[in-house]
Length: 370
Ligand SMILES: [Zn+2]
Image (cartoon, rainbow, N blue to C red; front, side, top):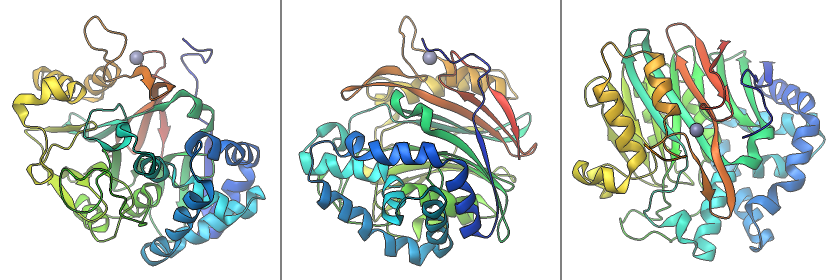
């Protein structure tokens, strides 16, 4: 399996004050990790593609973030200054998902773009015994694991938050005092038309920045509106819950969105479009075409009520019967070793993030207090 023990904890990076100051603290606390990631990032993500062209695409996204969240541009500058690298380097490592999708378009890699079911994270939200729970399995290449940290943000102008992130990045899913957000990759679709998978639709606000924009909102409604209100740069589903119990998924392409509401007391999503608007998979075909979503739904549907975080953790940890992979992923993703890098369950009422540092079948869910 791996050498980490079952009780391994994430490095928590505490960030306080202005956004520039938070960034500078992040950059200096994670200096070696960030410099290491920056030195390897292009080899990992860009491969043999035209690197200068792809770097330019990342730079073209900066004005979109400046318009949507200028404070996060200050934070990127702070990270760069704290780590002693360039603004462009930090901004680019914040575009890993977008550049992965772009490379798929450029090289015609069907795995990134064609509507299939790659294992690229799964997400869950439910109303349970504890109140609102939002959960995430982060699935990607094992090689990312050493770079993942837990940001504990205490901005002086917005709610406190937790966000998992690659060192040097402003955030991937997490929770605030008001909302929790998880996310999963969707095959890239440029433009608005279903069935046109490989047409790159240009820059927009990258995923990492969208997560932080969502985490400063007061409600699911506001978080959905914030995502819908900007041009985006990748295709993802966001699963969002707030303290009032408003749970939703929002499937997004660069220019369009579609919402899903819970069927009963929970909602789940993996890596397939499910909404009619995006010509998604009908319920009757889910088992054959998106087994992780199907299995997670069936386990939650059959579980005794009220649901709680232990039921959710067992779903996040589950493998397909007789198989070594499942909702908890262990398989080749493209040419590399893929795993569930972390699982979390955000308990909004308690302000607690429960998270496993590595695949949840091998690592305990441990508590982090907001
Ligand atoms: Zn597993």
